[in-house]
Image 1 (cartoon, one colour):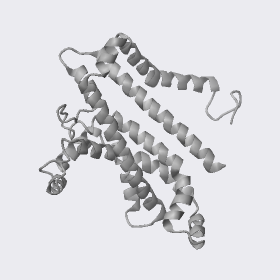
Image 2 (cartoon, rainbow, N blue to C red):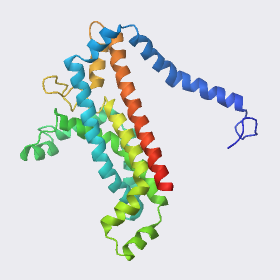
Image 3 (tube, one colour):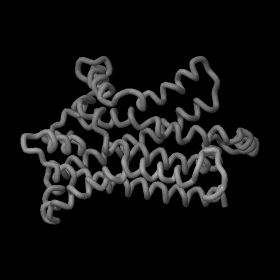
Length: 279
């Protein structure tokens, strides 16, 4: 690690540190401070009354539950996708590898409209699911599908580098010593990918909780059916006739705290898991 006064290719520690702090302030700290400022305009009682209203608490429950289920699904299939991309060679592998990042490049509103069309009663996947008694569009199932779509790259890209560095000789040694495939995965592979898997899970969960564009169309936004998400409630307060900046900021503050706590907890667990693995 270079000292502050050491020479570097990028000129000047003071200049680079100043640019870093300025960009961090303009893009992160000042916007977050404005959320706090608007939230603090409300009294504590008004804040509690707002976040405990039935529609708001239900929206939080919907966002948290659907995001958790989607992150769990992504954790399972993300490991499988990363394993296929790392361990096997097949035609179209590079194309598949590039398509993993499609949710990052595709506008979330476009994804939401496309998923709604496909999983609606008139869509081919929606009709197929309807035959077995599953309604996707305009239900919590649709919200989970949208969150799976936008969250899968986090898990795959977190696990992929770890699997690339994991020697295949470890698996071969385990199998030669009589270990089953499940035992090899449980005792050799899973401990190595666990920190990365927790990171991907946490990122997918945090992204899903605050997601708006991809879920706004497929959810149906029905308070009666419990398909309103937190981001939609915030937009309601900003787009209504009487714009409620304080209320929107208060809900956004709770959302921000939830995401921060989740990421902090995942990082702590990841750090503990990494220490156990390296010891």
